[in-house]
Amino acid sequence: QVRLVESGGGLVQAGGSLRLSCAASGIILSINTMAWYRQAPGKQRELVAAITSGGSTNYLDFVKGRFTISRDNGKNMVYLQMSSLKPEDTAVYYCNARILTFGSQWKDYWGQGTQVTVSS
Image (tube, rainbow, N blue to C red; front, side, top):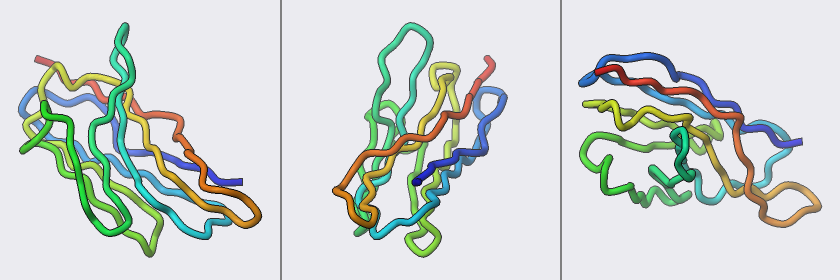
């Protein structure tokens, strides 16, 4: 059973910083792309940042220059460093990973989400 568990959310003032972490656990053969999505109330879930196993990244335009995604392949972890936070960044942030397990095909897994609230 593969699980993704996020941590690091919370309440921060505008202009502040937070670091989200996500750990993948279980019987994992390989992890391809890892990503962070977010969903604000009344809005669709959107891709915030993604990173391939080789380290290539892409970002939502709104967060470019403020957020940095990174990963530790040895620990099956992905991080999102968020700086210069804005109230518009308030959302539930979800970790996503494409994972290959024994006896299975590549499959997308999701974490339970962590709340990030930015006060003005």
